[in-house]
Length: 439
Image (cartoon, rainbow, N blue to C red):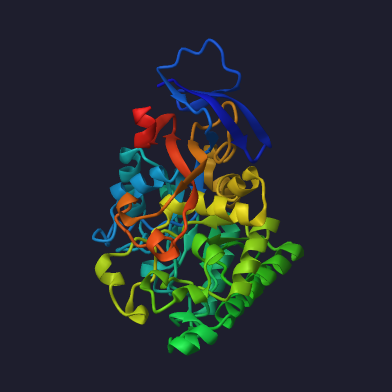
């Protein structure tokens, strides 16, 4: 299908493009940017007053299938991704069974391709069954389509296993995606501090993150392995990542929309919507995370999407399942952070477009050169959104099967900026808002 997106504000953070114009799509590729003439489009989309940007890239979204279909199914979660402007996402391996066999990875990718809503890039399990003992067949999993290897939120207790995994990964150029949470210090339901003490909740100290980071960095120095650090949550953690990058270690890091905007005081009166992992930390940590994302210490902003069933959330705070839906909020919360920091729109978008692609690097194969970008000849993954729109998040609006979010209007009382009007994946319209269809 040939599509012409007309009269929009074209923004490509990677190249600095920011101008009014048209975008022409044919055969799944961008074939024209700016002033497009004599293009016989099968369909035209009027983007007057709207921003035309690269499709968003989310490095952390659990799709809950296979094994947790009561909390989310591939169809519903990829529909949520498209509604949020996300055209590419990375999913961790903590499904049931874990993604430790090539057949499981191939099946997941096949189902995602059939749905044609979003590009799916799985992480393979680092150890069999995520048990932290026997390494998986990384070469076979890579051939099946894995872009890296992870334990999800299950820490490797045996440091010898972690060392061997890094040695092997470094030998073949694989990337490890690790959560910096020491297995012996983590496990609290809230961040250690005055709020946790006052509420009588078990605390997780900052040391749970910093001790794990020191261990990871020492092993990176010994092996040269490339490591992506998932969901940094503390000011001390940000500073350690900053020092590691200054040293030249091959590490990258991300932060979740939850930690970027919320702190432990938002727990309020034991609100289970705020039961998250990693736990929400103090305001000084949140401020450091915001600055770290702005100055490039943290490479990407992620939704940390994890749909949780109503029964699992309707429990006392300490017993509630941690997690929240986030795919449909990623754009809005990136824009809100940018507004708070006084950043240009392109800078906000960069954290969810080209910067995540740099984290993935060559793992994207032929997509590496153009994913997260608007470039002639590049892949036609596009997000069209209204930057001026404001919306109140309510559960009934969310396409995700998980309806729980700490940013619901009934909790925060504020509206979020930015609303996706149309999402194009590989040259096909994957989502279109009702308002846009009516127009």
